Image (cartoon, rainbow over all chains, first blue to last red; front, side, top):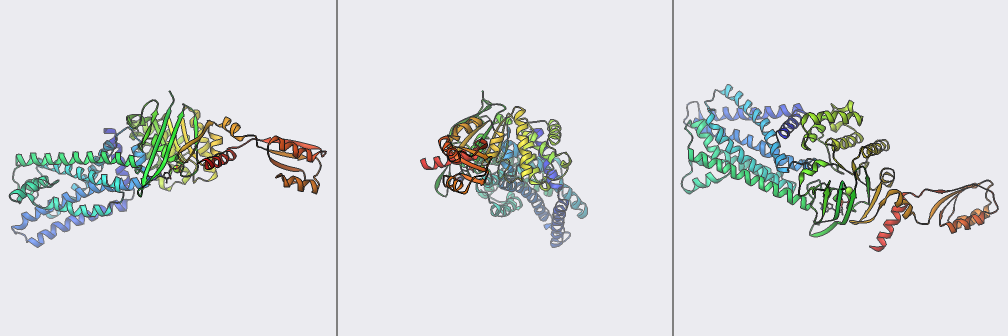
Length: 257
Length: 311
Ligand SMILES: Nc1ncnc2c1ncn2[C@@H]1O[C@H](COP(=O)(O)OP(=O)(O)O)[C@@H](O)[C@H]1O
Ligand SMILES: [Mg+2]
């Protein structure tokens, strides 16, 4: 399994840097986007605004959003493309299960994206002097968001296997993800609050805002709930993926047909 | 135990509400070191059969055993299968040949180090060493195909599946691929090779199976197959010492004899008909008369015609 991860990491890295202009362009655009977001937020809110905190929170949501979109697109879009070009069938001709191969892929591409997004973020924080906090306590909420993102990605990947063309679905899902990650559902009241906790990734995103922006401690119960939600969505995604590989084999549509 | 034992495979697809029977009844066995040519016209069900064997399509009925184990139940046995699929990219185009070999090696269960080492060996054997650092997408079609075969061999599988391995290649590249296949079989791997090009089956295979509309209509050792299905009709070439006069030539032609020039004739038919032709030539002195070896093309067309009449 670890061998598989390294092989996937190497493959993703090579494919990523094969066209340096494309890769650098991507990084520049992301950097510029983040920077504009930070500066813009400040400018709108004014230097000592009480909205400052609120806007930082939104920014945390945005950063998460880009990372999650990377994860989702890496898995779902690549499944679609590889099914069309035909490499998918070669990949599945393996003693490893489809689920473990694509999990290794997901981990590899995540490592790459995470490193680049964090680097970009640190550069921007240096430039803008933001007060965002990165205490170790954000690891668990972050993990819950990533698990949820994987679950979501594998659900869309399953759709890619069965329906082939999912660009439309991906575009729509990006707005959905923005809502899930940037909406402060932790501020919702009553029964809505429970709904907020049950949506994929939102609970974890809320905790991240708590830790990074509001500098409040972690709420044990909410952490537990968010981890559970992450695990549930992850398992759901993997189960759906296994199932859809089976259906694709039944219908003979793994390949370019 | 045979390397491959496939029994009564069956697969139909649903397309736009109606059922397409791609594979109706296919049973195949291949022993180690044996090359089976799987022949059939386009749409006969060759690719579907290959994918049923490789565990990429689930059969409606029937069983596949590779070295005794079912790839649909025990995917570990896929470590014993290598395949080059038709109409697919079998490689990552952005990676170099060596990177592809390493990646797929690990994916088939090798350690990274072993994969690299074997990859280098294969590049050497396949004559791709000087191309090892360029992206696959810049290679010629022939080189890509050679590399795809090399990649299918990285984990030294017991069974190699080649779907139309020479399709779309120029003559020279096709020749290289042919000699590679011979080399691989000599090394003891079992090979299933689909093709609709008969000459390939004829020179490469130990046995042939002919599929039409999802059903195997003939299966036999290649030489026996040629002998058996060639039937009583043979092609003879006849050479004369003296030239043929116009009247005789005209009559022979009306019997279907091809008069290539005044000294050379060509005739396809039964041996009785041959003697009739010889009678007519009598008393012109003969220089040479020879029966030509029957080839698969001839047999294949005949079989398909028969199949079509029955079906
Ligand atoms: N995924 C699929 N869905 C529907 N029909 C298919 C599919 N794959 C193949 N077919 C049909 O099944 C038949 C056999 O195809 P195939 O196995 O590719 O034949 P061959 O490789 O001998 O040309 C053809 O009629 C083809 O159109
Ligand atoms: Mg085919």
